Image (tube, rainbow, N blue to C red):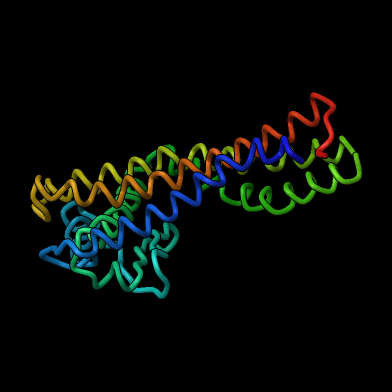
Length: 224
């Protein structure tokens, strides 16, 4: 079990740090005022990009913001939708960046969306088969679990450029469209850079978990 923690604990701790960093950065940048709300900034960014048909809705939760490619709608949490801060603008326009990707058929986003069903299936069934295979010492079952869980790793890896690109678009268009000044871009960057760390941590965690099970299978090691 010690080797398991050697593989999984570092990215897990990085994930905890990333979550803390996102919340603390958002809280800090929420104190930096903006001239408009997150919803207004996203609306202007979308309209400037010719995406008037993309809607914006308010949803419950904290940092539950996302873009729905099926409905072509940005769904923003209350703090982001109504918040008049650099934090709200950064998060809202990051989600608007996904709408830009969708409209331009950004290849990594297309691949990521196609990988979602397999990743969801692999994260549940794949991980379960891996654990059962380890407990019962059944390599064939473990190999099936590894193959299924690989879909999760693939999704996480493809997701990185998608999220980084959405943040890059947000930072660029916020300044380009005059929603913030070039000097204010640094405040938005703090929130988006912190969020990027969570995606990196999730990717590393899935890769290291898969590497651990591959080590057991190919090296003949037991989980204990």
